[in-house]
Length: 230
Image 1 (cartoon, rainbow, N blue to C red):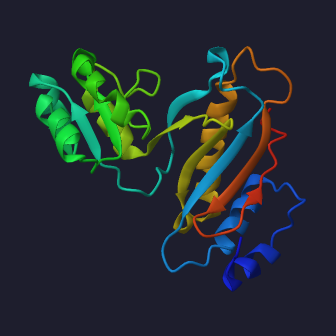
Image 2 (tube, rainbow, N blue to C red):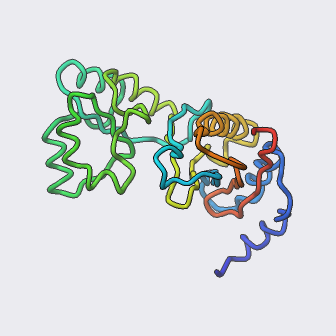
Image 3 (tube, rainbow, N blue to C red):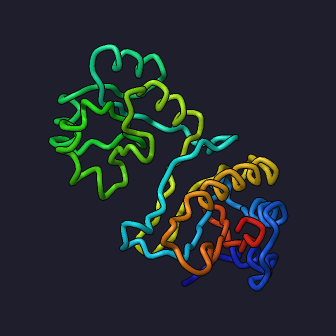
C-alpha cells in the first residue's frame, strides 16, 4: 500500500517492535499526526475471544471523561412526555412512525446514534435490516433502549461511546482528538480499556487482550503496552 512522505516520516519515529506505555504511546500518536485537520485518535483492540459464540461477545457503552471531541447527532424514537424530555435534553431528531418512514422511503441517515424508549421498539424493529448493518440499532446493552431517553441523550452528547467486537474479534473505538493532548487521551484510554477488561466473558480462555494499537486518522499505528491492565 502506497504511503505518502509525511506518513513515512512519521512512521520512522515509531519503533514497531516496542509496546509503549499509554502516556508515551499517545504522545507519539499526537506528535506523528500531521494532517491539516484535527485528527481523531482511535483504539484498535484485538481480543482473545471468538465473537461467533454468544457467550464470548464483548459489548457495552462507556462515557469518556473528556468525550470524543465529535458533535454527535442523536435520533430518538419516543412519544408523549418522553419525546418532550428528549427534545429538552438536546436530541437532534425526535419522532415515531414519521421518522421510520423517512428512513425507509428517503434512505435518510443524518444521525450518529439512535435512542428508543422500550414501548417504541415494535416500531423501530421494522428498521432492523437497515439500522443493524450500520451499527445503529438501539440496544439495552448499549443503554440506547431505555425508559429514560433524556438521560441517554445527555450521556451520548457528553461523550458516551459504544464498544463491540467486529467479525475479526477487534474493537474499534474513538478516544478523542489529537488536540486533546496526551494527558486527556490517556484518561479516555484508561476508561475505555478498563471497561473492556471488566467486560471479559467468563467463557474467554487464554490471553484476553492480544494487542492494542492507537492511531490518528492519517497517522501510523502505535502499539500499546496492556500488561498492567490484565
